[in-house]
Amino acid sequence: MAEAIETGASGKLNRRAVVRALLKDRGGLLVIGGLGAPAWDITAAGDCPENLPLWGGMGGAAMMGLGLALAQPERKVLVITGDGEMLMGVGSLATIAVQRPRNLSVVVLDNEHYGETGMQETHTKHGVDLAGMARAAGIPDTRLIRQAAEVHALREAIHAGNGPLFAQIKVDEKTEPLVLPPREASILQARMREAILGPEAHLQ
Amino acid sequence: MQREQLEMAPDAAADWPDRIYALLKEHGIRQVALVPDAGHARLIRRCEADNDIRVVPLTTEEEGIAQLFGAWLGGQKGVLLMQSSGVGNCVNMLSVAIAHRTPLPMIVTMRGDFGEFNPFQVPMGNATQTVLEAMGTLVKRADRPEDVADTVNATLRLAFNTYRPTATLIGQRVIGAKTFGK
Image 1 (cartoon, each protein chain N blue to C red):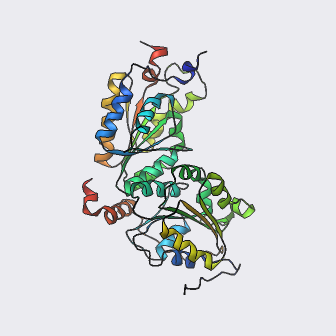
Image 2: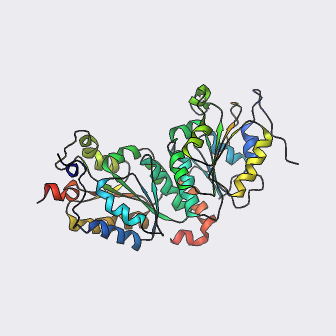
Image 3: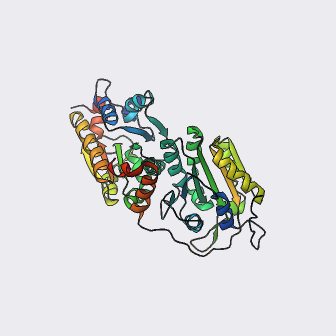
């Protein structure tokens, strides 16, 4: 039986609980965490070399996932990012749809706000439908998720490798405690490369 | 006004696009991210015909910076092809390559720097090298067809040997050789 996923005061899913559920028994899953709360969320679930939390590059997370997924077709790649970050790079949904990497999933934790800058509303608060945009771009599996059972099904789909997959998960807007990953980005890059490529990574 | 004068593709007899392609193969480039430019048209066709190179057309050039970072995470080398106007779209995303120390070679065909017809190309073309250098990129220029291959080779070597963004700017005089000649 899958674990329960807590909800917040709004009745929407708690972002930390969602990420914990998605990363449970993750195996060789490679994870890119978008700038801001998603980077802290993947770190709270357990920092490891297969995590690449971003401290910048707003709008780039999904494309980083594409480059990684194309380079490592045998590994599953999961991008977890926020609604503001995804909106800034929304054209990349079209680029990803055209490339069709089966091993790439992009998950947006949609709290409808810019959480790091004072909780200003994003476009999704006003009805912009990111999952619909992904579907219109041609991504074959798109999901708008509000329920715990859908999160568990999403985890299975991420590991199935029938992507590309895009999921927009409505989450509670409560700000969670900061759980910061290493900030020296050359270490973040090197540790993931070594986890994938072995010691040869540093001799490429 | 002929279409060629607007777009300025290289002379059909010029061999520098083929020499760039040979360098991409020599350096083991596997991902080519691009927003098309007429100056790169022949190189793009060569890459598209190569089953060992994944050509990824972008909606905006900064996507390519992010993509090539992901490629390097996964152990593949890539290169970003674009026109000088696209450099302006990349500015903040270059911080990703700088902070992570990612090899990130760019091959930029220049507009707005030699015999330009379109006023909109001039501001970014004039600022291209300054903007790249302000963002920590090592920039080399090639303004003669015979210099292009050596300059691109240096750009690829500097990127992959020293872990940073690098760029070759191919001057408009090279690209527009047919129209603007010697």
